Each structure stands twice: as structure tokens, then as C-alpha cells.
Length: 275
Ligand code: FE
Ligand code: FE
Ligand code: ZN
Image 1 (tube, rainbow, N blue to C red):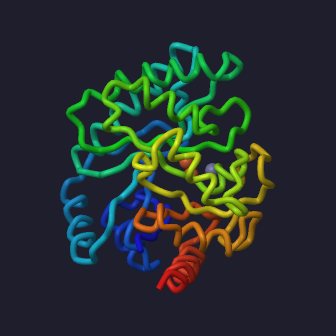
Image 2: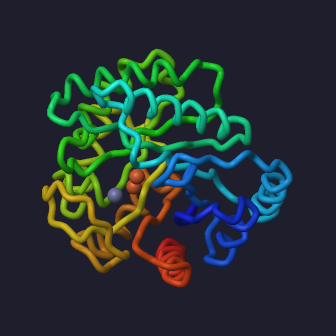
């Protein structure tokens, strides 16, 4: 099984790969740059190569980058919109340069302008960022629907994908906490939710899972992650998710509130359950 967690690359890529080994992961997620600020580090190719050796020697699966949360690709404000596009374009380029297979991002917030307007803005932004020569796949993350978030309905994700010219470079990252908060009952009707996803978006678009429990109820539209088995989704439903025939081969990235020790425990628990 492909299982890992979110790790920091503040001490470099090689250090992150070592941390992944320490927690028993064979994949990991990292921020494409400091999530709260805008500074991006220049690439240290020696560091990247050192990481790649570790990944190869230990049969790692695909790494997933996460674009900064603060970017809003649906904004009507030229400065915010321009900054979002500029930063994604820069990070996307860098991730392509080091052959990272996936980069997930939060589609955006329409801040009162309406979902239709927001979707149009997101489509236009992606049509600028994706030139068609890239290899890194950009993943739209399924959102909880907090505030004016776009992408909490499968129809919205499908509409974005449909509008993007080079949508062969687009996929979806399915966040279990977000999807549940958005009102999709993955606890009592996982089959039904995945069938709906397949009908509206297409199951082939699904490239990665953010495996999180939730502190909030179904349809709460609130984004609060919980540790595995300690939330409203619960261990049984989480185990059904990782074993589901439509999801089984996908990479599962934990974004649970944990230090490294907590991640190690959760990864151990999940690996033991699947064998
Ligand atoms: Fe996210
Ligand atoms: Fe997530
Ligand atoms: Zn979240």
C-alpha cells in the first residue's frame, strides 16, 4: 500500500525523505513553498538528487506537493488573482523541473461573486498556468465548502476540468475529511459516493487521497481534521476507504494533527490493517 503523511521540507528534500523512512512511509506530501508566506527557495539539485536516491532505494511511490493555501484562483481582485497565478506558475515550473508527479491545490473562494463566476476565474487561471508541455499533474482538492469555497461539489470540479484546455494535466485529490464535511456520506454509503464521483468527474481523475478523520459532522461545511479513528468518520470507515476496490492502489497521504511519532503510529495501524 502507498501510505505517507505531510512532511516539512524546511530542512531540505533529503531530510524529508529520511523523515518519511522514520515514520514508515513510502510516499509523502510537502508544501511547494512556505504555506504562510510567499518566499520560495532556490533549488539545490544535490539535495534533490540525494532525496531521489533514498526514494529509489526504498521503492517510494509518487510524491505530492501542496500549493500554498492562501492562493485564491477565484478572486475578483486583480492583485490577489495575479499573485495566485504567478506563484502557482513558478511552483509548477519548479516541480516539473524535479519531476514531482502531483501538485494539489485548493481551487479558490468566490467571496460573494458566486460559484459560476469563481469557476470561470479558476479555469482562466489554469489555462494560463498549464501550457501543455508539463508532466506534473495538478490536482483540484475536494473542499469542505467552508465560507465561499469552490470545489466542495463534484459538479464544480467537473466544470473546472471541462473548461481547461490541457485537462490531461488535471486530476483530483480526494480529501476524506473535506468530502464528509461537504455532505458526502463516506461512512454509510462509500460505494454510492464513489459511484457519484465516477458519474460526475470520472474515477480516472482520482490520483491521490488525503486520508483524514474529521472533528465535524457530516454536511457541517467545516474543515477540521482529526487523528485517524478519533473523529466523526471513525476507524472502521477509514479502513473501508483504504480497502475499497476503486481506491486501493492510490497513494494515501495523512494530514492529521500529529507530530512524527503520531504519524508513525497511524501509518503502522493502517499498514497492519491492509495486509
Ligand atoms: Fe489541502
Ligand atoms: Fe487536504
Ligand atoms: Zn482540510
